[in-house]
Length: 379
Image (cartoon, rainbow, N blue to C red; front, top):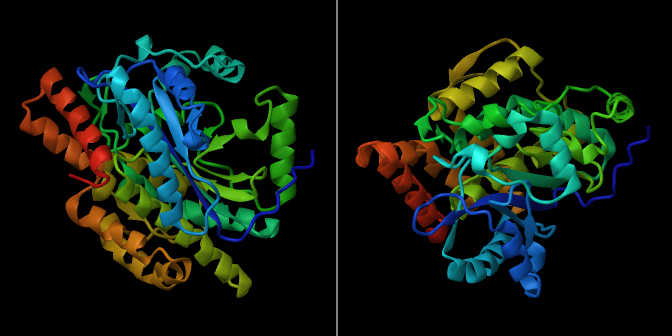
Protein backbone atom coordinates (compact mmCIF):
# COMPACT_ATOMS: atom_id res chain seq x y z
CA UNK A 1 0.00 0.00 0.00
CA UNK A 2 1.52 3.32 -1.12
CA UNK A 3 0.02 6.28 0.75
CA UNK A 4 0.87 9.33 -1.32
CA UNK A 5 1.28 12.64 0.50
CA UNK A 6 0.08 15.61 -1.53
CA UNK A 7 2.14 18.72 -2.13
CA UNK A 8 1.19 21.46 0.31
CA UNK A 9 2.52 24.88 1.20
CA UNK A 10 4.27 24.92 4.55
CA UNK A 11 2.06 26.13 7.42
CA UNK A 12 -0.91 26.96 5.24
CA UNK A 13 -4.00 26.66 7.41
CA UNK A 14 -7.61 25.53 7.03
CA UNK A 15 -10.47 25.34 9.53
CA UNK A 16 -13.58 23.15 9.76
CA UNK A 17 -16.38 23.81 12.27
CA UNK A 18 -19.32 21.46 12.87
CA UNK A 19 -22.47 23.28 14.00
CA UNK A 20 -25.82 22.11 15.33
CA UNK A 21 -29.12 23.24 13.83
CA UNK A 22 -31.52 24.01 16.69
CA UNK A 23 -35.14 25.10 16.86
CA UNK A 24 -35.36 28.83 17.55
CA UNK A 25 -38.24 28.30 20.01
CA UNK A 26 -37.48 25.06 21.87
CA UNK A 27 -33.71 24.76 21.45
CA UNK A 28 -34.09 21.13 20.38
CA UNK A 29 -32.25 19.77 17.36
CA UNK A 30 -33.83 20.14 13.91
CA UNK A 31 -33.25 17.65 11.09
CA UNK A 32 -32.96 20.32 8.39
CA UNK A 33 -29.33 19.98 7.32
CA UNK A 34 -30.21 18.75 3.79
CA UNK A 35 -32.72 21.59 3.35
CA UNK A 36 -30.12 24.15 4.43
CA UNK A 37 -27.50 22.70 2.06
CA UNK A 38 -30.00 22.81 -0.81
CA UNK A 39 -31.03 26.38 0.02
CA UNK A 40 -27.45 27.71 -0.12
CA UNK A 41 -26.51 25.76 -3.27
CA UNK A 42 -26.95 28.80 -5.53
CA UNK A 43 -25.15 31.16 -3.16
CA UNK A 44 -21.53 31.98 -4.06
CA UNK A 45 -20.70 31.19 -0.43
CA UNK A 46 -21.93 27.59 -0.76
CA UNK A 47 -18.34 26.31 -0.93
CA UNK A 48 -17.95 27.22 2.73
CA UNK A 49 -20.93 25.04 3.76
CA UNK A 50 -20.96 21.23 3.79
CA UNK A 51 -23.32 18.44 4.95
CA UNK A 52 -22.38 16.25 7.88
CA UNK A 53 -23.01 12.83 9.44
CA UNK A 54 -26.36 13.78 10.98
CA UNK A 55 -29.17 15.82 9.48
CA UNK A 56 -29.09 18.10 12.54
CA UNK A 57 -25.59 19.30 11.57
CA UNK A 58 -23.85 21.47 9.01
CA UNK A 59 -20.15 22.15 8.66
CA UNK A 60 -18.57 25.45 7.72
CA UNK A 61 -15.09 25.30 6.22
CA UNK A 62 -12.44 27.71 5.07
CA UNK A 63 -10.34 27.82 1.95
CA UNK A 64 -6.62 27.12 2.29
CA UNK A 65 -5.25 30.29 3.89
CA UNK A 66 -1.99 31.79 5.12
CA UNK A 67 -3.44 33.16 8.37
CA UNK A 68 -6.00 32.05 10.92
CA UNK A 69 -7.75 35.42 10.60
CA UNK A 70 -8.38 34.83 6.89
CA UNK A 71 -9.69 31.32 7.61
CA UNK A 72 -12.06 32.71 10.26
CA UNK A 73 -13.34 35.23 7.71
CA UNK A 74 -14.29 32.32 5.44
CA UNK A 75 -16.19 30.66 8.29
CA UNK A 76 -18.05 33.91 8.90
CA UNK A 77 -19.11 33.92 5.25
CA UNK A 78 -20.44 30.38 5.54
CA UNK A 79 -22.30 31.18 8.76
CA UNK A 80 -23.91 34.24 7.20
CA UNK A 81 -25.11 32.16 4.25
CA UNK A 82 -26.64 29.56 6.58
CA UNK A 83 -28.31 32.12 8.83
CA UNK A 84 -29.98 33.81 5.86
CA UNK A 85 -31.76 30.60 4.87
CA UNK A 86 -32.20 29.09 8.34
CA UNK A 87 -33.81 32.16 9.88
CA UNK A 88 -37.10 31.79 7.96
CA UNK A 89 -37.15 28.13 9.04
CA UNK A 90 -37.03 29.25 12.70
CA UNK A 91 -33.64 27.54 13.02
CA UNK A 92 -30.55 28.84 14.84
CA UNK A 93 -26.93 27.73 14.75
CA UNK A 94 -25.30 26.42 17.93
CA UNK A 95 -21.67 25.59 18.62
CA UNK A 96 -20.64 23.12 21.35
CA UNK A 97 -19.21 19.64 21.78
CA UNK A 98 -22.64 18.05 22.38
CA UNK A 99 -26.25 19.14 22.40
CA UNK A 100 -27.24 19.49 26.07
CA UNK A 101 -30.55 17.65 26.00
CA UNK A 102 -31.63 16.35 22.56
CA UNK A 103 -32.55 12.61 22.66
CA UNK A 104 -29.98 10.75 20.58
CA UNK A 105 -32.46 8.06 19.52
CA UNK A 106 -34.54 10.65 17.65
CA UNK A 107 -31.72 11.92 15.43
CA UNK A 108 -31.54 11.07 11.73
CA UNK A 109 -28.46 10.20 9.69
CA UNK A 110 -27.72 12.02 6.43
CA UNK A 111 -28.61 9.92 3.38
CA UNK A 112 -25.15 8.81 2.33
CA UNK A 113 -23.87 5.25 2.02
CA UNK A 114 -20.69 5.80 4.05
CA UNK A 115 -22.72 7.22 6.97
CA UNK A 116 -25.21 4.35 6.84
CA UNK A 117 -22.27 1.93 6.96
CA UNK A 118 -20.92 3.61 10.10
CA UNK A 119 -24.25 3.23 11.90
CA UNK A 120 -24.76 -0.33 10.71
CA UNK A 121 -21.34 -1.30 12.03
CA UNK A 122 -21.24 0.66 15.29
CA UNK A 123 -24.93 0.47 16.24
CA UNK A 124 -25.71 2.33 19.48
CA UNK A 125 -22.33 4.10 19.58
CA UNK A 126 -22.83 5.38 16.06
CA UNK A 127 -26.38 6.58 16.75
CA UNK A 128 -25.25 8.43 19.88
CA UNK A 129 -22.86 10.69 17.98
CA UNK A 130 -24.65 13.97 18.68
CA UNK A 131 -21.20 15.52 18.82
CA UNK A 132 -19.58 18.49 17.15
CA UNK A 133 -15.92 19.32 16.70
CA UNK A 134 -13.39 21.73 15.25
CA UNK A 135 -10.71 20.48 12.86
CA UNK A 136 -7.53 22.41 12.06
CA UNK A 137 -5.40 21.57 9.01
CA UNK A 138 -1.81 22.80 8.75
CA UNK A 139 0.25 22.29 5.60
CA UNK A 140 3.43 20.20 5.76
CA UNK A 141 5.97 20.64 2.96
CA UNK A 142 7.96 17.45 3.68
CA UNK A 143 6.38 14.07 4.38
CA UNK A 144 9.33 13.12 6.62
CA UNK A 145 8.15 15.72 9.13
CA UNK A 146 4.60 14.42 9.47
CA UNK A 147 4.90 11.59 11.98
CA UNK A 148 7.39 13.33 14.31
CA UNK A 149 5.08 16.36 14.46
CA UNK A 150 1.99 14.19 15.04
CA UNK A 151 3.73 12.49 17.97
CA UNK A 152 4.85 15.84 19.41
CA UNK A 153 1.32 17.23 19.15
CA UNK A 154 0.11 14.36 21.34
CA UNK A 155 2.21 15.75 24.19
CA UNK A 156 0.26 19.01 23.88
CA UNK A 157 -3.15 17.44 23.30
CA UNK A 158 -4.46 18.10 26.85
CA UNK A 159 -4.09 21.86 26.38
CA UNK A 160 -6.35 21.73 23.32
CA UNK A 161 -8.80 19.34 24.98
CA UNK A 162 -9.13 21.49 28.11
CA UNK A 163 -9.32 24.86 26.35
CA UNK A 164 -11.98 23.68 23.89
CA UNK A 165 -14.04 21.61 26.35
CA UNK A 166 -17.68 22.49 25.74
CA UNK A 167 -19.71 19.34 26.35
CA UNK A 168 -20.56 18.90 30.04
CA UNK A 169 -24.17 17.93 29.28
CA UNK A 170 -25.57 14.95 27.42
CA UNK A 171 -29.13 13.66 27.52
CA UNK A 172 -30.13 16.57 29.82
CA UNK A 173 -27.68 15.43 32.51
CA UNK A 174 -24.43 16.86 33.79
CA UNK A 175 -21.99 14.10 32.89
CA UNK A 176 -19.32 15.26 35.33
CA UNK A 177 -16.97 15.71 32.36
CA UNK A 178 -15.76 18.94 30.81
CA UNK A 179 -15.76 17.14 27.44
CA UNK A 180 -18.26 14.31 27.12
CA UNK A 181 -17.67 14.47 23.37
CA UNK A 182 -14.12 13.20 23.82
CA UNK A 183 -15.37 9.99 25.42
CA UNK A 184 -18.30 9.49 23.07
CA UNK A 185 -16.42 9.98 19.83
CA UNK A 186 -13.54 7.66 20.68
CA UNK A 187 -15.97 4.72 20.86
CA UNK A 188 -15.95 4.57 17.05
CA UNK A 189 -13.52 1.84 15.93
CA UNK A 190 -10.99 4.10 14.17
CA UNK A 191 -11.44 7.22 16.33
CA UNK A 192 -9.52 8.38 19.38
CA UNK A 193 -5.77 8.65 19.82
CA UNK A 194 -3.49 7.67 16.94
CA UNK A 195 -0.76 5.08 17.00
CA UNK A 196 2.70 6.59 17.42
CA UNK A 197 4.35 5.39 14.24
CA UNK A 198 8.09 5.90 13.69
CA UNK A 199 8.16 5.51 9.90
CA UNK A 200 5.76 6.26 7.06
CA UNK A 201 5.95 2.63 5.98
CA UNK A 202 4.37 1.61 9.30
CA UNK A 203 1.42 3.91 8.61
CA UNK A 204 1.10 2.43 5.13
CA UNK A 205 1.09 -1.08 6.62
CA UNK A 206 -1.65 -0.05 9.05
CA UNK A 207 -3.78 1.38 6.23
CA UNK A 208 -3.18 -1.70 4.10
CA UNK A 209 -4.28 -3.98 6.96
CA UNK A 210 -7.42 -1.90 7.63
CA UNK A 211 -8.37 -1.93 3.94
CA UNK A 212 -7.66 -5.65 3.59
CA UNK A 213 -9.83 -6.57 6.58
CA UNK A 214 -12.65 -4.21 5.57
CA UNK A 215 -12.36 -1.92 8.60
CA UNK A 216 -12.12 1.11 6.31
CA UNK A 217 -12.76 1.82 2.63
CA UNK A 218 -10.29 4.71 2.46
CA UNK A 219 -7.96 6.62 4.77
CA UNK A 220 -10.49 9.39 5.50
CA UNK A 221 -12.36 6.86 7.66
CA UNK A 222 -9.45 6.88 10.11
CA UNK A 223 -10.83 9.50 12.51
CA UNK A 224 -7.95 9.97 14.93
CA UNK A 225 -7.68 13.00 17.23
CA UNK A 226 -4.52 13.97 15.35
CA UNK A 227 -3.90 12.45 11.95
CA UNK A 228 -1.99 12.93 8.71
CA UNK A 229 -4.29 14.05 5.90
CA UNK A 230 -2.33 12.74 2.90
CA UNK A 231 -4.91 13.86 0.31
CA UNK A 232 -4.42 17.49 1.43
CA UNK A 233 -0.75 17.35 2.42
CA UNK A 234 -1.58 18.44 5.96
CA UNK A 235 -1.67 17.40 9.56
CA UNK A 236 -5.24 17.55 10.85
CA UNK A 237 -5.92 18.17 14.54
CA UNK A 238 -9.43 16.93 15.40
CA UNK A 239 -9.36 16.69 19.20
CA UNK A 240 -11.14 19.99 19.94
CA UNK A 241 -14.76 20.18 21.00
CA UNK A 242 -16.97 22.40 18.87
CA UNK A 243 -16.53 25.99 20.00
CA UNK A 244 -19.44 28.32 20.67
CA UNK A 245 -17.89 31.37 18.99
CA UNK A 246 -15.29 32.45 16.44
CA UNK A 247 -13.04 34.25 18.93
CA UNK A 248 -12.31 31.02 20.81
CA UNK A 249 -12.10 29.10 17.54
CA UNK A 250 -9.45 31.57 16.38
CA UNK A 251 -7.54 30.96 19.63
CA UNK A 252 -7.53 27.20 19.12
CA UNK A 253 -6.66 27.54 15.45
CA UNK A 254 -3.73 29.81 16.29
CA UNK A 255 -2.46 27.45 18.98
CA UNK A 256 -2.45 24.49 16.58
CA UNK A 257 -0.98 26.59 13.76
CA UNK A 258 1.86 27.75 16.00
CA UNK A 259 2.58 24.33 17.47
CA UNK A 260 2.96 22.73 14.04
CA UNK A 261 5.17 25.50 12.68
CA UNK A 262 7.24 25.53 15.89
CA UNK A 263 7.88 21.79 15.61
CA UNK A 264 8.67 22.12 11.91
CA UNK A 265 11.25 24.77 12.73
CA UNK A 266 12.83 22.56 15.41
CA UNK A 267 13.14 19.74 12.87
CA UNK A 268 14.84 22.11 10.43
CA UNK A 269 17.39 22.88 13.15
CA UNK A 270 18.06 19.17 13.72
CA UNK A 271 16.34 19.19 17.10
CA UNK A 272 14.46 16.21 18.53
CA UNK A 273 10.77 16.77 19.16
CA UNK A 274 9.06 15.99 22.48
CA UNK A 275 7.42 12.61 22.82
CA UNK A 276 5.50 10.81 25.53
CA UNK A 277 4.65 7.16 26.25
CA UNK A 278 1.25 6.08 24.98
CA UNK A 279 -0.03 5.47 28.52
CA UNK A 280 0.73 9.07 29.52
CA UNK A 281 -0.97 10.37 26.36
CA UNK A 282 -4.10 8.34 27.19
CA UNK A 283 -4.13 9.54 30.77
CA UNK A 284 -3.72 13.17 29.72
CA UNK A 285 -6.65 12.94 27.34
CA UNK A 286 -8.86 11.48 30.05
CA UNK A 287 -7.79 14.06 32.64
CA UNK A 288 -8.41 16.97 30.28
CA UNK A 289 -11.80 15.57 29.25
CA UNK A 290 -12.80 14.94 32.86
CA UNK A 291 -11.46 18.04 34.60
CA UNK A 292 -10.96 20.56 31.81
CA UNK A 293 -9.14 23.66 33.02
CA UNK A 294 -8.69 22.04 36.45
CA UNK A 295 -6.75 19.08 35.02
CA UNK A 296 -3.31 18.25 36.37
CA UNK A 297 -1.52 17.12 33.22
CA UNK A 298 1.58 15.02 32.66
CA UNK A 299 4.19 17.26 31.05
CA UNK A 300 6.87 14.87 29.77
CA UNK A 301 8.10 11.32 29.53
CA UNK A 302 9.59 11.64 33.04
CA UNK A 303 6.06 11.93 34.46
CA UNK A 304 6.35 15.51 35.76
CA UNK A 305 2.92 17.03 36.39
CA UNK A 306 1.38 20.49 36.61
CA UNK A 307 -2.02 22.18 36.59
CA UNK A 308 -2.82 22.92 32.95
CA UNK A 309 -3.49 26.60 33.64
CA UNK A 310 -0.07 26.94 35.32
CA UNK A 311 1.75 25.25 32.44
CA UNK A 312 -0.12 27.16 29.72
CA UNK A 313 1.62 30.59 30.08
CA UNK A 314 5.04 29.03 29.46
CA UNK A 315 3.77 27.31 26.33
CA UNK A 316 2.25 30.52 24.99
CA UNK A 317 5.42 32.48 25.71
CA UNK A 318 7.46 29.85 23.85
CA UNK A 319 5.14 30.09 20.84
CA UNK A 320 4.90 33.90 20.73
CA UNK A 321 7.77 34.39 18.22
CA UNK A 322 6.19 31.77 15.94
CA UNK A 323 2.81 33.49 16.24
CA UNK A 324 4.38 36.81 15.24
CA UNK A 325 5.89 35.14 12.19
CA UNK A 326 2.55 33.53 11.24
CA UNK A 327 0.54 36.71 11.79
CA UNK A 328 -1.62 35.26 14.58
CA UNK A 329 -0.20 36.92 17.70
CA UNK A 330 -3.57 38.48 18.55
CA UNK A 331 -5.42 35.19 18.07
CA UNK A 332 -2.90 33.29 20.20
CA UNK A 333 -3.47 35.95 22.85
CA UNK A 334 -7.14 34.95 22.99
CA UNK A 335 -5.97 31.72 24.66
CA UNK A 336 -5.08 33.77 27.74
CA UNK A 337 -8.70 34.97 27.85
CA UNK A 338 -10.04 31.41 27.96
CA UNK A 339 -7.74 30.60 30.85
CA UNK A 340 -8.73 33.78 32.68
CA UNK A 341 -12.51 33.85 32.15
CA UNK A 342 -13.25 30.13 31.80
CA UNK A 343 -13.88 27.65 29.01
CA UNK A 344 -17.28 27.02 27.45
CA UNK A 345 -18.13 24.08 29.73
CA UNK A 346 -17.66 26.36 32.75
CA UNK A 347 -19.90 29.07 31.29
CA UNK A 348 -22.56 26.47 30.45
CA UNK A 349 -22.60 25.20 34.02
CA UNK A 350 -22.89 28.75 35.34
CA UNK A 351 -25.90 29.39 33.09
CA UNK A 352 -27.56 26.14 34.16
CA UNK A 353 -27.00 26.92 37.85
CA UNK A 354 -28.52 30.38 37.39
CA UNK A 355 -31.67 28.77 35.96
CA UNK A 356 -32.17 26.26 38.74
CA UNK A 357 -31.64 23.01 36.88
CA UNK A 358 -34.09 20.85 34.95
CA UNK A 359 -35.30 21.32 31.38
CA UNK A 360 -35.51 25.10 31.73
CA UNK A 361 -31.82 25.18 32.57
CA UNK A 362 -30.91 23.05 29.57
CA UNK A 363 -32.91 25.30 27.26
CA UNK A 364 -31.15 28.31 28.78
CA UNK A 365 -27.77 26.72 28.03
CA UNK A 366 -28.76 26.28 24.37
CA UNK A 367 -29.96 29.89 24.20
CA UNK A 368 -26.64 31.00 25.71
CA UNK A 369 -24.65 29.01 23.13
CA UNK A 370 -26.73 30.43 20.27
CA UNK A 371 -26.14 33.94 21.62
CA UNK A 372 -22.37 33.40 21.80
CA UNK A 373 -22.26 32.22 18.20
CA UNK A 374 -24.16 35.32 17.08
CA UNK A 375 -21.90 37.58 19.14
CA UNK A 376 -18.74 35.88 17.91
CA UNK A 377 -17.24 35.88 21.41
CA UNK A 378 -17.78 34.43 24.91
CA UNK A 379 -20.62 36.01 26.91
